[in-house]
Length: 440
Image (cartoon, rainbow, N blue to C red; front, side):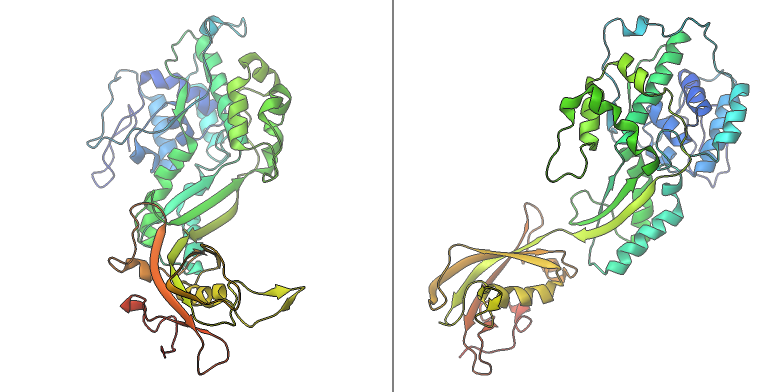
């Protein structure tokens, strides 16, 4: 990997590229001096090359150092052979007329030099990034990827692809805004242009880095429409209170809700940052932000398959079988029910964690369901075994939820007192898998 002005690497390395130009040099130097990691510097310079973010942190720091020390002769960039898709950007502030003409201090501006950044380079190499709080540092390494994959493999799910989701602490948005305002002030003082006020989203850059590693380790591709989700929840207790000042400045953005543990959600913080004025923000939060002592914590690493919906019809020939469990004052009146007879077999087949049962209408315990039968659906949650979904023509994953067609018959069994589940009208590949009784 090469930044402008860096020396060429060996042929065995990844293709050389140059994404930072001379106009990015002061921004990179300013951010580095305040303790920002190389990947966040690339984000603030609006670099959209996915391959560049995937290089090891140490290599990026080394190349960034060479870039800042190099001469300013070459300004043209070398593009990748294959263009990356447009990346998502996040707007950090809304410009106001005359905002660029403001001067926050009367000091004589000094352009940051590479010599002043050498000490910062050495000290920041081992520090936690003051913007991403270490997410684009330690949590992009192979050790964390293996930890995630071990969690996935231990859950014993069946999947042919995965979608990766990440939950970030809301205070990261505050720190991004503070870092950008710090850069904006310095660039304004230096009389240098700052054409853009949006950066590559942290979540987007993290997925660029983590997706190929997870895909290689799990042996399946990443797919945004996959039913199997791998999720990671990050938290940073050390800086949890950094976004609390926004509740005073923009109280209408933080409204309590029953299903939320805290009013300081990511969307509420972003909404407040869009409303708060720049001068009010600068009064409550340091720009640029300081480096924390500790990294983020990966609170949760979870994986789960999407819900599977089994839709069909059932006939009930028994007059001693309720539709749902018949329990009065904690006492079960009958041994089983339509819901349990159908769902327990499907639960075992799909190895699901739980289910929801619904039908089009109800019938009394002593009423039989004849004719075209009664329609019903079973929603299976947390299914570990999805081999039935791979059978051609049995299900569709193209649109909407997964629907499996079944026509079941419930009738008294001669071999036991309670009714049993018969599968005479089920697809042939399910015959005998849900019930071992025969039709009389």
